[in-house]
Image (cartoon, rainbow, N blue to C red; front, top):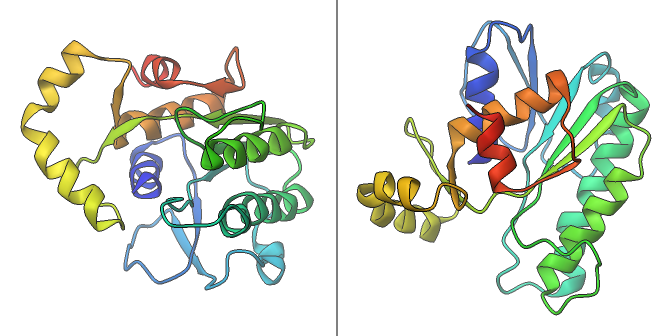
Length: 211
């Protein structure tokens, strides 16, 4: 869902010259600026490395829910996969900015009680230690999908359908608790262009950048 949102903003932005997406399945998306690379196993991008050179930024939006997962399995799908992609990109485009979509409540100490938060914190810390030009960790909370964008998680879509009628009220009442796929995409583009004062961005930072 986040990937769909940032892709839309990239394709709309006149400053973005080209976009390459790495996806597990064909999306059917067509655009003159877009090239789609199909890779069923995102943990191994070595075969695509020569096609991933010369890029200014990576927006890493892949992720899974920790619901029902063991820590070992969630670590493999979160930490191992993300670091594998990041290290491939570091070889292919070492001067890029790496933007990772993490989550509100992530535990940078890696010692908290919440398993998913520890694993996300470990992932963030490892990414920040890599010698990219810059790396930014985005920690969105609630994200409202716009323009027909849908989550791949069914119950998320049910929740969004319930929230949508009251979204304008929520936005006024708690502007730092909710964002949209548009705002998130614009904020990611903003840090890729100009950087930001902190490398870990909470919801207030994201919405401030998206103006």
